[in-house]
Amino acid sequence: MMDLTGHKYNMLTVLSFHSKTSEYNKWICSCDCGRECVKYGHLIRAGQTISCGCEKIRRSIESGKRNAASLVGKRFGRLVVIERDNGYNKHKKAMWLLKVSGKTHGASDSERF
Image 1 (spheres, rainbow, N blue to C red):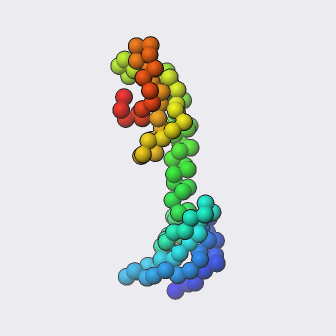
Image 2 (image 1 turned 30 degrees about the vertical axis):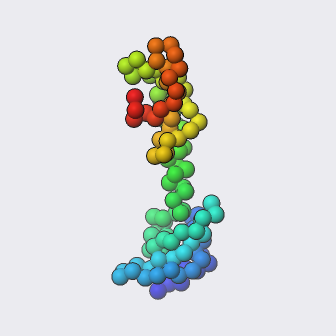
Image 3 (image 1 turned 120 degrees about the horizontal axis):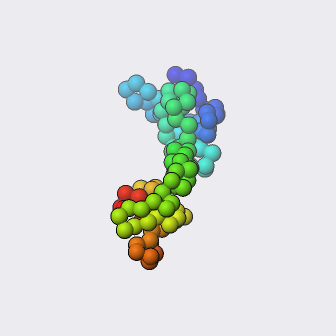
């Protein structure tokens, strides 16, 4: 077993050995965001695991921001998208301000209209 303790891979710094499954070693890591997590060593070294999961969320949010302008002004039946709301729903989907027949309807994610 290769000792990964103290090594930094992308956003993860390996703190200590955690356990061994039937095939793979798990390591306790500290992420640049401040969280600790347990990750498989072979995935860390291969670059397939780069953070505790925060980077995936950040990329998802950034992707939503890039795609946000594409819905503004679009009509869905009687609903018209006015602008992107600053919030996200519990599934990390962007929220949108909508207008119905000239009145502001409120915020909704794109799956509801």
